[in-house]
Length: 324
Image (cartoon, rainbow, N blue to C red; front, side, top):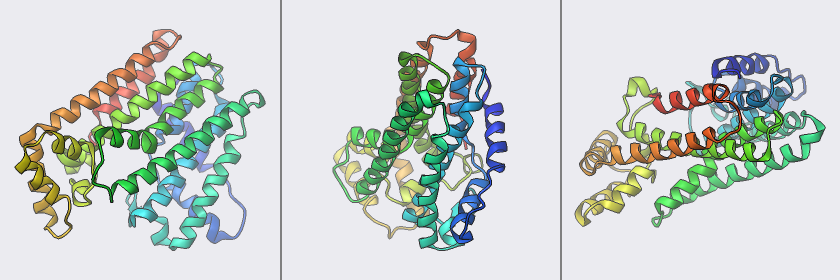
């Protein structure tokens, strides 16, 4: 079983070796740019780690793992266009460095290239791998659409929000683990267990990320605090606060989240005060931990020796302890 650092090193080395010699340059240069400016490589590393649970040979999993990273970066590229973001990993986003139309088309190319890479796997598992990858790609797009829809809706429930983050964030983590297990020769039961491990871990991770956006330390979190509040994002914290608040407090929250006219720092401060009074930080942390514990229980059920599962369990614990 390889650890996360080793898997990350393999992925970074292989990404740096990707050669795209096709033209026109305006189409392919943005692809090389976006995959070269960093990233934690969590998803492709999980493919390799999961494969190594069941097999000492992981070479055949590298190209499919790169497909996952290409697809993930394609979603980020298009997300940046939709959000009109100017920075990605502290570098100019593709649509700012080039233009919007080039960014859209280069993103399309990344999605297509991801299929070329995912298809480079043993023929015996290719139909299963393609079915998994295609279903996951559809679900991620569905999650993004729900996220955009929620900006206009006022009837979002907590279950709606959890389903959205499952689709937008969690299923790609889950599918990365299931993909690695399939390529490692795991049983059907174990591939399902690893998918559920990743699905629950992904939800736990996103809930913690939501909490850090409000209550994190700017220096440790790596970005400005309160951006979800400024953007009127209906995160778990907001929805839970609306659910448990008394009428007057609820009305204050709804008013705060219906305007862009307030000074951003004042808005964040006022919302954070309400969240603190309602104990929202602890409620969110507890919910996140519930999903994390569900994830660990699924990993514990995978039918390989405990010592082989240590690296994945350690990775999951470190992910939940992150402050950036």
